[in-house]
Length: 395
Image (cartoon, rainbow, N blue to C red; front, side):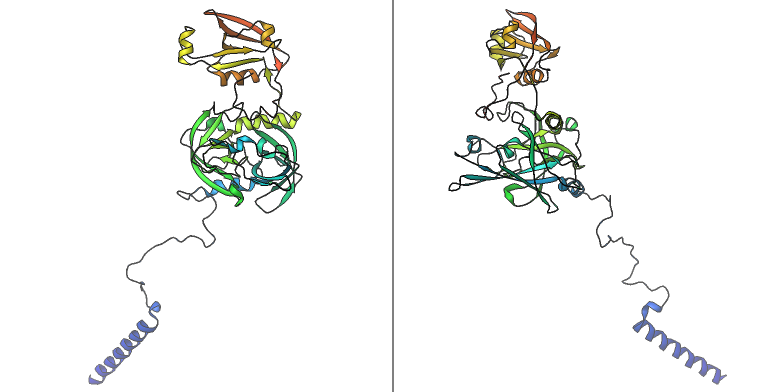
């Protein structure tokens, strides 16, 4: 019996010694072992970043990655015989593309941005970026460069279309700018101050901005996304990376961003672009009148119940309106049955009329409404001196 007990004690001692050695040197060999106490289940991101389509709170990188390849830098060069246009020195409104002037060579090099909108190489930008340029070069985000040629431009909306002969171009999708709402998050993409492609974020601050004195035809998206010199012609995109505007101007006393920028809506840009590609320019209706908005004081003097309409301040002699019997002092109420709220709406409605065809308008004269039929003319092209004047709504 004593021997059996001795054998058991020796065996137990050996087993305990073995367990001690294993638990000290190779604890993972023991069943039920847990590192650091209680078991914890964790999920780790893949080493190459989040999976495609993964939701990233607070990030707009997907939208930026979709849109950025389609935004190009536009470099232009032209001969100059005078100082920069007065608008560039305007303390209130500044076209935000960077100019570097060399007085000895009498040449100016300008920097702007553009948006590739078709695989055929068409690029949307601002008229003032490429105006009178001798040479135009574009640089893609992937490092490729190419010479571009002007297809056409429209000074009255400050839009232009240029084209490059390149393959495998990344193109941007047009968004529904008419669905944009105040408060929507937007991204502005361009090349500010020549530092390289940059994305800034803001919101839609206002819609339908007019009477800003920037272009003749205005219907701007206002945004507080930071845009600076070099951003002209760049893209304003929604959070899906779709184009909703072409950045064109800022309000600034210093030349830098103060959080008040304006973009031409994608809807207008697409319409102008299609006309330019098809015919090389834009054709608009014209009746030859000068108009102004009805102020409350004017409305009261004309015994009008509201300020709707446009007061005809002048009529061009022998123009379409003059030949139709329209007189200064008439108040234009509607065009082809569409009501006129102010002079900006009136300009848009007249411009949309096909030249060479009759149109029906309604005016108020001596407190009575009077229908008038006008044979619409073709809107003359603005002279260089008129392109940057505050639009006095001369139609």
